[in-house]
Each structure stands twice: as structure tokens, then as C-alpha cells.
Image (cartoon, rainbow, N blue to C red; front, side, top):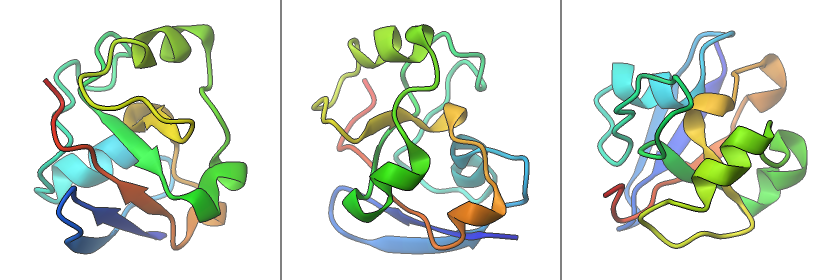
Length: 108
């Protein structure tokens, strides 16, 4: 299982193992990491799983996976950055071992 590091808005880091095939949002929810709400459960119909991909990982993770994700990102409560993604759309693969995800101060 790849280990993912979640960094909250205060800089506190939490490292967790996330199963292959899951997504970054579920990794946070299953491990009680605050900062990702995931109101729609990963249905790509809200933006409460907004996150920032660490600059060292942007090229590996890539940009929004669909036009729908890009549109939803326009409505995030926190600051929209070039590294913004919806964490429900980042599928865990072995290539993401060590991925670092930063969480916004708010999802609402």
C-alpha cells in the first residue's frame, strides 16, 4: 500500500497507507484526517474534498481528470491554485508512493 502524507493548513503532517485503487479522499476519510469532508462520497458533485497536490508531485498526479472536475474546482471555498485537485479524483497507484497532499483551511 502506498503511503500518502496529508499536511493540514497548520503544517501538521499525517502519514497513512492507502490501498491501491482507492482515492486520496477515501484515504483521508478512512483514517480520520480532518480537512477533507467528501460530502458527496466521491460522486464528483461537490468540491468538499479539495486539496493541493505538493509541487513535487504535480507532474506525476496531473491536472483535473475531466471537465466536470475542472468546473467544480472553480467553486471551491478555499484558494484555487494551479495544484488544486478534487481528492476523490486522484486514484491511488503504486506510482503515488510518498505522495504529499496539502489541505485547505476550509471546505465550506
